[in-house]
Length: 622
Image (tube, rainbow, N blue to C red; front, side, top):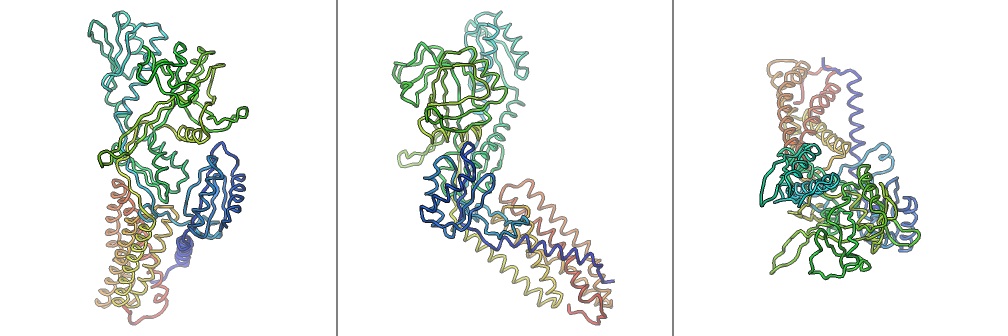
């Protein structure tokens, strides 16, 4: 009656051994480390490793170990002092050829890593780092879309030789095309309606001119805004990866906000500068009649042109260009910096999508022998003091970084030269490679969590788990005697399983997650309490010990299942509809519910059957 077949004991043994093995990595701690990620155009990882080791030898810093894979080099140290000293030396040695980031590397032994046993990640509140809450400017995303339609309208009408007075974006809500003749407008309506079927076109007569008004449907406006948030999340993730940050958290919060958490980051200014910058390129033809430009800063640009300052003095103070944009940065799919072998000057190699290559090839073929300018457009947040108060504002800058003569038609691959430094080429390549933000983002909240605070949170959370565990153990041992000790063994095994599963999932443990574990410790013995109380009632009713054990487990099962399933449903709802901290709590609670049912129903039953199932028992110590 109370005997398990051999396969159940073997299943339990395999689960225990596996749980212990995959929970073990969390006991070995972490080593201070420096992570080196080569740039895409840099030398190989092995060459970077050799240079790094030579630089550290010159510096007199002894690394604990050096790990290398196809993407990066990880150098471990015995102390944080060696880590910081090594990072400074490596940044000087490698320059912009690689990203050097401070990190904490798990000190897991090789034999555990060989079976893919790794510690779970620690969240920002435990490890320290920086937290950004960023707000996406959704209206700017719509405006940028309208500006693209404005450029497309000009291109289509010019190709068909339809005359118009002006095409403008009005109130950031619609594109307005004005015509002097009604026939021109009628011809344009038919053409644009066929070319842009998604737009709502209306006709009006104002100021003795014929107007054509194009508006975005509400569905497309919403789609543009949703895409802007999704694209920004992808771009931010790419930029964070370029920084070499381990275990970042980048997720949407609400309709227009993005949470970025970078655990372990110490250079917060660099991180803020990279992830908060909106950068793209525009390619425009230079107005040959006004090159080089002789006018001053206050003098307006000639009609039909735009005027931007030049970054390099050899192009003059300003460059006058045609208003029409040949190509924008949205067609760039890859960018890398390198050195021109002939001149020794830094350059950025650009690769376009096939659609961008077609547009660029057609535009440059028509302008061979003429000058083309590359405009770098950057939007970033700047913080300054005004009357003793900190004011944050978004600053947009537009600079000409290159002017070159088109020697032949360009296609999907070309290069930008004339950059003032290797560092400028590296930063430009990084921003273009990671992708341009689909809409500007404003950092509305910034928090830095120090590692000492994170360690304090770990210590307090660990102490809470220990105290809760000890109190439950003492109560169960005193109240249920031998059966209480069996329940305590199951409770310890339950904690091991929770840690092992979190490690296998490579989940991120946060402070709310620790709260979920503490709650699980208290709830995990509920099932055993129900079973043991049922056994007591069966004994009082005159049942034999063996029958009481069988009835206790059998009759309490439905109650245990009902209670745990309802709690699990609540945890799943918290996970689906909650945000970061709430989800962390829900994950540990859900795992704890499942493991506690396994250990309480299968684990304790196996031990009870092993002790009492194969002999006559006159009295149970319960």
